[in-house]
Amino acid sequence: MSDKILLLGHERKYGLELVRLLKTMGHYPVAQAWESFSPRSFGRDRPELIIADVDTPSAPPMREFSPLVRKVWGRDFPILAVSRSGKCAAVEALLESGASDFLKKESPLPLAEKKIARCLEPGNARPSHPLSEDIPPALANLFLDNPRLHRLRDLADLHAGATPRRPWCRRHAPPDKQWRGVATAASIGRFQVGKPVEYLLWSRFHMFRMPAPAEYAVPEKVLLSRYGPPLLAAVDRGKLPAGSDVYALIPRDGINAGYIACLLNSRLLDFYCNRLASCPDGHLRAETLRDLPVPKPNPETAPEFIRASSMLTHFGPNPESWIDRQSREEWWQRLDDLVAEAYGAGREAREGLRALHF
Image 1 (cartoon, rainbow, N blue to C red):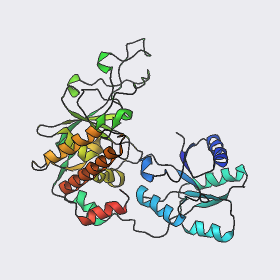
Image 2 (image 1 turned 30 degrees about the vertical axis):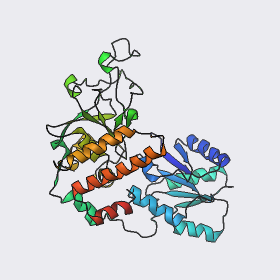
Image 3 (image 1 turned 90 degrees about the vertical axis):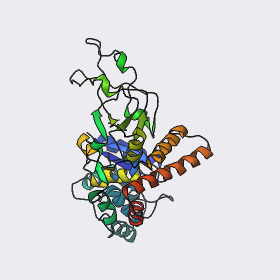
Image 4 (image 1 turned 30 degrees about the horizontal axis):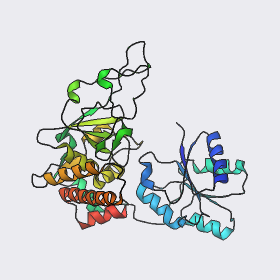
């Protein structure tokens, strides 16, 4: 699989040259403007290298950008700074602020190719200026030494999705009747499952398990995308089968599906899966999901979770009016507060989340 390389803030002409060069080298370029860049938008499928145009007016100083990437992604990433100015003082300032290497825009493409290859060599990422690498103890202890917590397997049964079966000798035909609607990761929004947008492709070189109908014939279940972050969970009441890129969580007796969806969509579990759980390649493993530390619902606060989930479902994933967006943000904050209270997170833990950009 080709490496993903992020191009930040480049002009169209120079950016197209870099895109062609990276594709020739066998990499997968992703171009973004500085205004739209967010480290958390990449999930766990993070780029191998960042090529940043530091001349753009909207570009933040390297001494601020490098620590931000390091805080959110948890380790140092190689950054190739691109600029028209090749003065020694400016280059030294960039390298001391956290850039791995420097490239002038007028440099020939062979030199750019050589510098990109050098930045991608293992261990070539330079540490940025000193900052706290450790997770705040109040935040780590919230998951490691918290008597309130149980495992997610105690609240719900986990079923992996499957690929629809096609009739033999008709592998390009639609799925059978029970697979007319298949919930995929693309059709999952926050607390809402829309109309399935696609069928999953079937390969004649693989055999996939056909799930028992009882797995999906439940009034409510939680569908969770395997890819993140952030975790994307939704409550499904349509008895839709789950595709191979989705997990289906069937709540145990007395547990509400909305409660589980609220936990999975919270910033706290998003932080846990990013920094404490073992998800190195961007895929959420079934065992990791079963072992997620979660609190059991409190009868006093459970109705609030269900209400918050219902309100967010009502507003939908893309509210159009400003009032709906404002109300959605208020309910989203209310949901995060409810989850923090369920975990027993104090002021230090919440400040630690904000410091780590969660």
